[in-house]
Amino acid sequence: MGEENAQTTIPPSVTTSLSTPSQSVVSESDTEGVETTPGQIESIVTTIIDQTTAAIEEATVAGQCIRELVTKQVTTGFTKREN
Image (cartoon, rainbow, N blue to C red; front, side):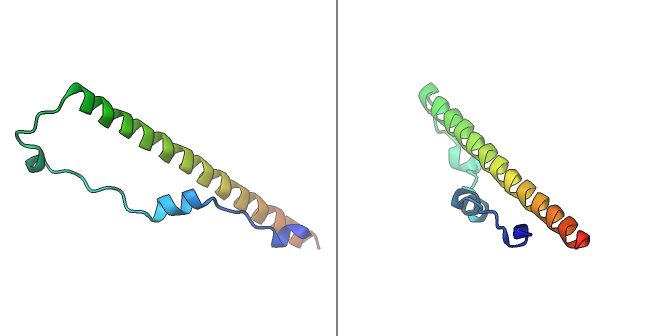
């Protein structure tokens, strides 16, 4: 019965990341003749891994929120039908 007013709080990091556009892509012409050091490559790869990990974590949280909302909706629907 109390389930009808239950709300799931979506963490700000999820809503922020969903509404924030991703960084622009660098075109090939921007990098012509530019030497890249192994340290820069390592830094770029680390950044990509970190951003991918963060995106996976945020997607997991978003999925959990959706699961909770669906579960509450189904539970509320069953409760209403029983009454």
